[in-house]
Length: 173
Image (cartoon, rainbow, N blue to C red):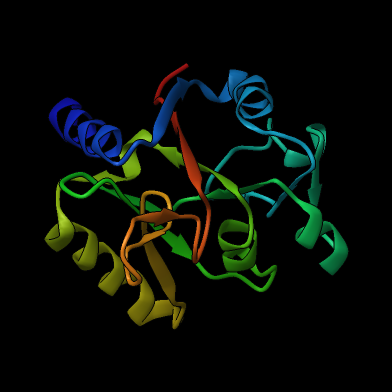
């Protein structure tokens, strides 16, 4: 696991993505340090965090209105998987419109459990195939800040966030 996490973080570093490590008990403080208000988010379900944490305890508007989403600087979501060799995040689309929260803001904060970091795309696809065949869900794979060079010079934030911050929740007490 340590090599997979190291590869993931090295890939994120190459993409200019900030990484923070925390334990679940300190997750609220890590999120508050990572966001710039106004912030919107999608509630994290029980399969992601235990009963000891809720985004409602932070200055984040969970279940944002269209106006809050438009005016938000930061969007906070969970990431279902990390892909070590690319630094990519797998973001499951939810009924709460998590894709809007992660893509329509200047700064995306993604929270991922250390155990959900996969070494490579093959391992991630195998996990997704297993899960999505059962549930019918879908996801997007996001790699770093949005960028395009379609018209010449590289432009960041053209089709999504200009900056990304990943919070890795370490295992154990």
